[in-house]
Image 1 (cartoon, rainbow, N blue to C red):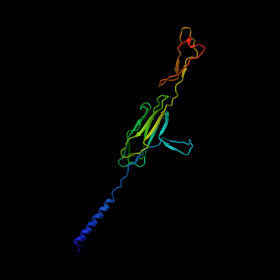
Image 2: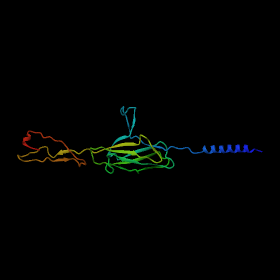
Image 3: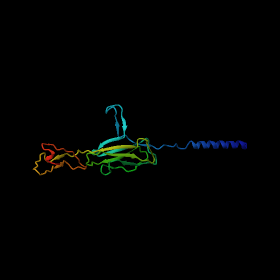
Image 4: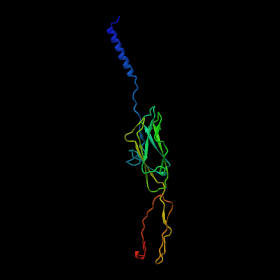
Length: 212
């Protein structure tokens, strides 16, 4: 027959063993995936065939390219609760004039996803001079984190049309004494931007003979 003191010791040992067993079965904490923008191009400081290639988050593109995709990558699959990734588009490019975003905001990622895209529709605006900037910034996501550096990218939209040609209706004008002449200028096509030009007057006459 066991003494009371021995029974107390056995009960205490069993209790401690049971506690250790339950703590070892608790699930490990999994860090959320990290989201970053894929580089838009590569910078080659030693030339296009050089061995050094540096990722670059900036790209120039003509507005005739139709569509462009920003790609978002995650370093691990999205967890069971999914993820949501907001973003902003700023810059000198105007929505509805130079581009249109075709992706929902925020982006919704399903469990297991490792990639998402932001689709941009480029609109030929008819401009021929100004290059427009489109700046993408990723916001603070839920169910994921942001890469400390690769969460911003720049797309520069270049016009794809040639500027109109300015011409004179005639190269010779006869003006009678005391009369005047209008020099008719024309553009080869309609222009969406203000037009300015420089001119000079030259010939056998002196400025005392006429005024501009």
